[in-house]
Image (cartoon, rainbow over all chains, first blue to last red; front, side, top):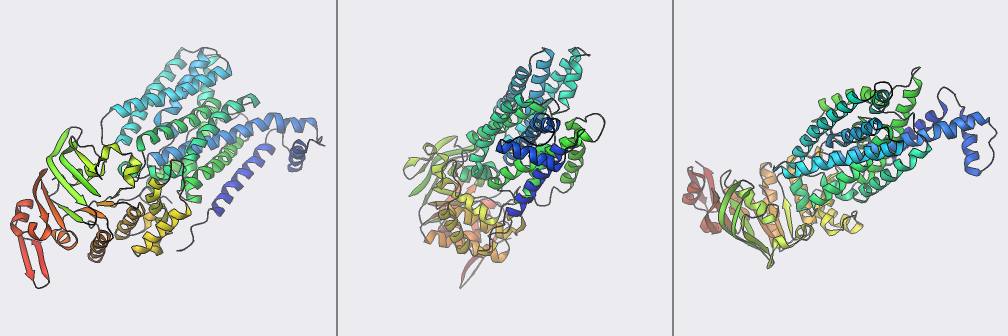
Length: 339
Length: 253
């Protein structure tokens, strides 16, 4: 037998993107930092020495950009991993974490939190619950509709429930105080990492790590789940419970990142596809590759968002500008092979 | 070991496809399921596989109800070769065959080196070892059918159920699949397949089961069951029979 395709070049590219994203994100900005300064600060941090750079540089790297860089990596990785899981589960490379209503549910939760003038942590919790509730509603409705194509029913239900939650968001925005609350809501709905601090990292990291761990543990079963339902069952996979586990894990990951960074669309669609072209469709390789690439991708986007204009551009707008043409290109080449 | 359907009423949520069906398949035997389109062949197949619950009656495997076994236990006893389809993702042929090993590992298992050996053996057995690293999406329909057969063999089952295994194949590959089916039975497996070609049943099967409008028309040894009259009744069309020293063949009239 010939040798299996090596995943090394693909991972090398993904890691190169991540490193490039990291270096750019830490050095570029209103307060430029040299590569040498960055290295000495990081070296000092690791070894415990005192860095021989100005305190301002150290503070920019560690206090201002550091948490934001960590958050961008985590959110990008989370959305990419969730998108990878959903695409496999729905046997469709055109779906993304938004389809089951996770994003719109989390959005409604968050704007409600802002409307009720709750604290940051409470807003995150409600956003997270909103995402889980939306997916739960979608799932219960999808499961009670008798159909020979449960996947299609689930996707359509996701669209419908998502638009209902979207109407809820509209209502809350309409009722909100237009001077204090509405700008915050609008800003949050467009996606941003500008307000991310150290205290946001743990509530983001915990759920993302837990959800990703479940998905990684199920990686071989997820390969089989990308076959038609009956085939997967004939191969010995209990598709019903497994689908619930995968959807729950991917929703957890999505909601946590939406709660932190607002709605950043398209990452979960674009990155899994790029990762698949780098390392192939096997989830054992695809999940880590998507996570690495997603982290690097969002770092690059976030760096672009805060440097390309006088004011920060919302992340969701940039990802849409890149994602929409990508989606159209994907759609036109849909009959070709998904390698 | 025996796979048996007793007094089955088969169908979907809202409609009954067939009733009063008794089917029996033993190890080492090939049963061909023949009948017109929409007659209930695929529904019966899926019921025997446990993919559809019977609306009445019971499927029994090795003396116990099939429904009492877990999905994973079933997959180690019965393998399913579906009609070929275009896969969504470009898994390698080897990965597709390795998926046949899923039921031999637990929930979090990855394929082991033992699984890889079994997959390689099955690819070799069907003469497609050279395809192992090709993407499943990039091979021909005939090759895909053989890959799905290799996947079923990798399950190391007692029974193999094939849904129209020759439907997308060229003439040469049809012969190859028929020979494989015979070889599977010789190695002790029970094989059930559906086909639109009575000649395939004559060639590869021990017994034939004729199904029309969800009812059993006839069942028994192929040579006795497959006559011109019965086939005309089965398909509602005229059939010609050609006989020479080598045997018998039917052609649609």
